[in-house]
Image: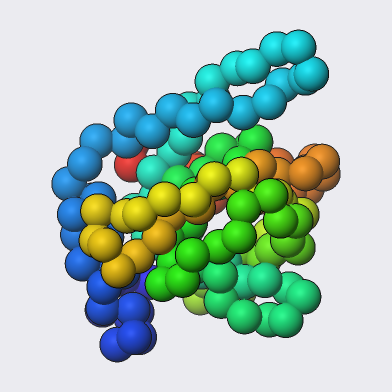
Amino acid sequence: MNLSTLPDSDTSIQDSICILENSPPTHILPTVVDDEERAFAKRHNLIYYLKVWDLSNDILLGHLIDINTDGLMLVSNQPIKVDQEFEIEIRWEDPDEQFKNICVNACSRWTGSDKNPSLHNTGFQLIRPSEEVIAGIQEVIREYTFS
């Protein structure tokens, strides 16, 4: 997948991808470890913006900007409600053109404007990700993040 494979409707996302590709991967976002303690988990910026779908209605939620085993951030054309639980699916093709996906429940925790004012960024916390989900996320981090 490359930038030229994004549909025309994603032109504004393509513009943001170009801006963000030139930014260093420095996002550090808070994530809840337990009720009394907070930790900071390094987010991994992706070189490709994988598509993320809402499985309740099979609608594209947005494109994955960064990820770790605790959460992720999307860029989307529409704002996403905060404190809403979603069953999401990250979909992509690997270099061998094999379909891959990760399905997990996640809760939207915050939303804000992107550098491109017509886009919105939303942070999600993963809800009880299984070992299989964590392994899939680690594969995405190995294969699709800045080194």
